[in-house]
Image (cartoon, rainbow, N blue to C red):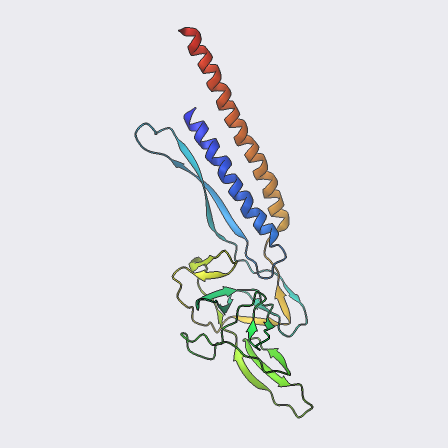
Length: 253
C-alpha cells in the first residue's frame, strides 16, 4: 500500500514535467537549429527508519538530441546552415560565450553582425580570449564563405574591391559538455571558451531546421497522458483499499 501511493504520486508528478518538455519541443518545431530535449524516468527507493517500502519515481533530463537536421535553402546572403556537427559562437551581454546553430544573421543599426535574437557573433580573427565583434561597413554587399569568412563588396559601381571583414568563430565542443540555458542557447558546463574548429563548415544561403520529430512527440504526448491516467487510477485504488481495510478493522473491534 505504502509503496503504491508514493510510486503513483511521484510518477504522476514527474509525468507532468515530461509533458512540459514535450510541449517545449513541439513549440520549437519551427525554430532554426533547435535541439530537442530528452527525459528519462527511474525509480529511487527511499531508505530510512520506517521508510523501507517507499519508492519514488524521478524524471531526469538525460540530455539532448544532437542529430543534425535538414538544411533548407533560403537564398539570403546572411543565412548560414552548419553542415554536420558544430556551433556558432556568440557574445552574451555579460561577456560570456554561448553557442547556437541558428544561422539567421542580421546587421544591427550599429553595423554589428548579430543573431536573430540580437546577440553579436564572435570574430575568429583574434585569439581565443578576444571576443571581437564583426562590423559590416555601410553600403556593401555581404558574402559568407563555407569556412565562415565574411567578405564585403561596395555597392558603388565597379571596379569594386572585395574586403574580408571577419570570420565566424565555428566551434565543435564535446556534446556531453554542453548544457542549454533558459534562453535556448548552449554553453559549456565549465563556462570556458571553446577553441575554433577547422572541420566545421557552413552552407551559405541556407538554414537548418529543428530536429524535433513532431509525429514522435505527439505520440509520446498521448502515451504519457495515458500513463498519467493510470497513476491516478492507482491512487484511487489505494484510497479504496484503505477505506475497505479501515471498515474491516472497525468491524473486528
